[in-house]
Length: 324
Image (cartoon, rainbow, N blue to C red; front, side, top):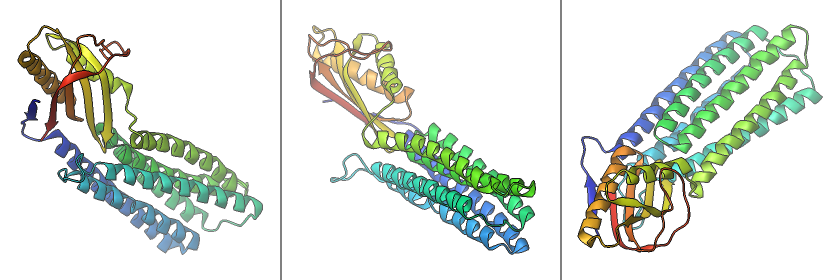
């Protein structure tokens, strides 16, 4: 077996984890500022309903805590028991966020139906609208920030938490639109807008759940496998890859494949080619944490190149590398 190490100024795994923690810290601060601004409006209006909504937003801001803990765990080195490290804690945090989005959707739907069946006058329209606008803008800014950074570092949990902030923003927007409708003389506007927003939240729930559960079930984007195959095909002497597999552990990608080379090539030279493929892949794909390569049987067929994939056979001889 060949052991390869990637030496650089900053390990990409550590850098992406630190960036995730940075995003969680700043977005948490943004949500707290939003809640404080809403509290100021609550103080001016004396609205009990607004106070309840603000407390709800503070509680939602707290979802950053399990996500921050997950990133903290991701920085820890693998142990004898957790040999792949602690990246899966991030998936558990993502699952918790999805559960909270589901809870938000159910609460929003229940409240909308309740107001539809039992209409109640909405007081402090101006204050309600002002707090709603503050809540929407603050939450949407945090949502855009979290989703952008989450996609940059390939964190499904951080993206899901971004969508969770968007859900809270939409809830605040519903308050604004409902208040506007009541002011215009349509008292049922409040629950109707609430139902429409509930439908949007269920759409966001589906999008977030699909991503988080795919990670938990070892789903991986096919284009990432194509990218690994593409990198391998550009190394002189490499004919292709067979049986390429990959999985996410948190926001770090682990891959393995059989390397197809000339069957007459000496094992030592084949091992050098494997090291070159590994080094090229780790350099080209910052999210890739490890690439384990086995030398394929002489009758193996290419299953993954830049163009696509077919089926092949397993090989023998191993080469694997991890970032450190």
